[in-house]
Image (tube, rainbow, N blue to C red; front, side):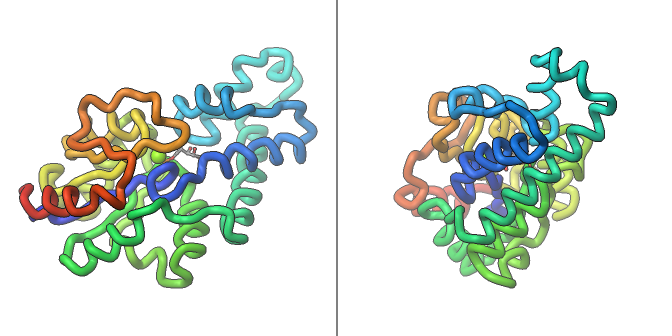
Length: 234
Ligand code: XBP
Ligand code: MG
């Protein structure tokens, strides 16, 4: 039996990227920017992991705005901080719900004694808001380890966040399964040697997942297969 399941957050625990996109757009308005990320633009921008990195990438493609900003690092941190405040408030107010099958998978792993962790590019306050909204005060405690955002130097598709999670849990990659929604996440987990189940989301359904151990559009229906794999592996 495998010893742990490592969960991605955005697009996996919950379809949160539309809430992120709206939060980015509201933060731009708060900061007097004319920027507005459409769904089509955001689908492309999601290739860049990390909200701060995404803002910096977009800024670099808009040199006119770039010239107006005296301190780019401070600008990016300030806009992203506003965005995170907006996002966490929306999630605390109930904007996000767990994807079908996630609550059952977490409950089953607890019943079977399979350890759980989170390995995400998103900022830690976003994880706290989502798990608080979904489970109340005990939400964070459902996961033995939570590795998030800037805790590692290189974000997905680099393997850093998964390697840090394995180290914190003192586990080998073949003792785990990762649950992801995106190609960036699949590449990261695969580079760390972790077999990966993909449940594509609204922004990743057109991506390639050749390296995945399983791709399912219905995690709930695939629970028995995933748990059988979990019991058979390692
Ligand atoms: C998805 C990401 C994050 C979110 C935005 O993370 O790439 O950057 O889009 O969150 P994952 P931040 O799928 O690994 O959970 O603005 O806090 O980065
Ligand atoms: Mg994701």
